[in-house]
Length: 344
Ligand SMILES: *Cc1c(COP(=O)(O)O)cnc(C)c1O
Image 1: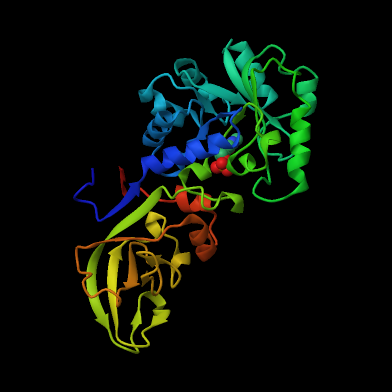
Image 2: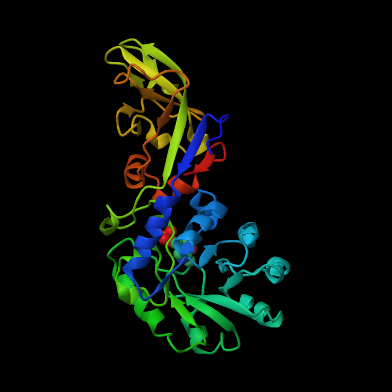
């Protein structure tokens, strides 16, 4: 439950997370739906996010590193794939844990075969030029001796209507039957909205599970999951003509009631919210510059708000992204450790 001592907390809605997963899964009923829970479950807490998603029915999880996979071992046998593959230094852990590596270089393929590593996944590059073996290498037989569960690739521009999407899809589809992979997987959150041709056997949403809206078609269907809540440390009257905060970038036009709350850019609440953000559904605008540990709100609309009260900070991800210039991914993964995370 709510920790009494922390002056800032993240309310995390496990029910909304489950519903978002089910909605995304139902876009393509013939494909399985996994979940990217890398970077500590996009900032929410990987273990708790995995539990909520597993309860909703999810059976395929994706993390970036073996350290992340190790943290999830406490949950037992659910399949976890490690997107960054296996470096030599990862091999000891890779042998101990149940997680599968997503092999992405010929060197990793050789390393895994030499170690008789067993089941794995493979990432193929189809034009993003980030991680992945080349289509040519796959066609030439690089993967022939591997025991591949999922052959995957990743879309560079799924959140845009770019001709690159169809090109990548066609390139990837051309590999069907070329390997012994049991499944093929291409789509992230945004890719799910590109239609069933992009779904293959397994889709891999991340952002949209956590309330992100990478394509406008998703608006209204994806529920918010993350809600920052902050305690009021002080309430003060600022007289007309006085300023608030660093560099005095906000000046009171009239006498203004101001609440100083326990939140700042060190918690991931970007300086981009300065004079932009708000609390309580727009009722209390952020005024002045966001400090490292403090934010000022105009609470003139609420005479009752007092020291010790809790306020909800508006954190609708598309809106916050427009206000700050940060991506929705950064807005989630930047949320810091001073937040006490609690699930409802
Ligand atoms: C992070 C990631 C995903 C999830 O992407 P979202 O845009 O958050 O849905 C899927 N696949 C791979 C390979 C990833 O790295």
